[in-house]
Length: 179
Image (tube, rainbow, N blue to C red; front, side, top):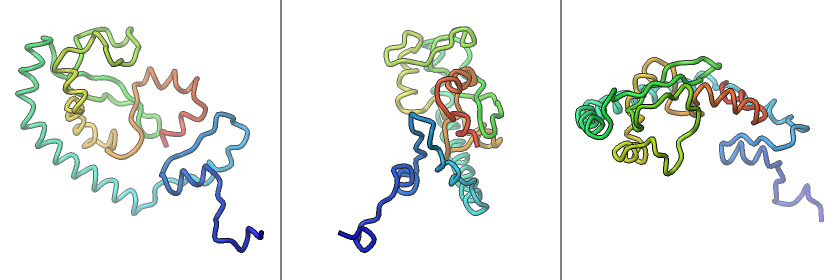
């Protein structure tokens, strides 16, 4: 059996994930990371496509925001009085921090000292807040962040700055996601 003349193509798992699934494979052992050399920044055409998608998303999300805002405000005020927006510092492209804005889906709490991620039965969420999270309505105000170029519709999720610090210590090469 001559593998060179067969119709099978043998590729590594990291190249399979990158080429066919558009994923970056990072193994648990850090001893063979040569494939990271193949990761290239977006070219001009890809950046242009991404920008067009972001602009279209901003327009659509702005229209959705206009329609939803008063209804969301009323529901939040009924179930958890206070500001309708939740602001949190996130880490985006090139490790730049920015203030991300969302509709508030939890009761007011000290998010700077209460550093934990939301869980399925989190007691900080109110009923309509839970609905907003499931339907992603809480993220509609992020069109402002997209319009400012602070985040993009396509790409890794901009994570809470305090969680980024934790993840950088726990997950090898976590900071690579910010490029």
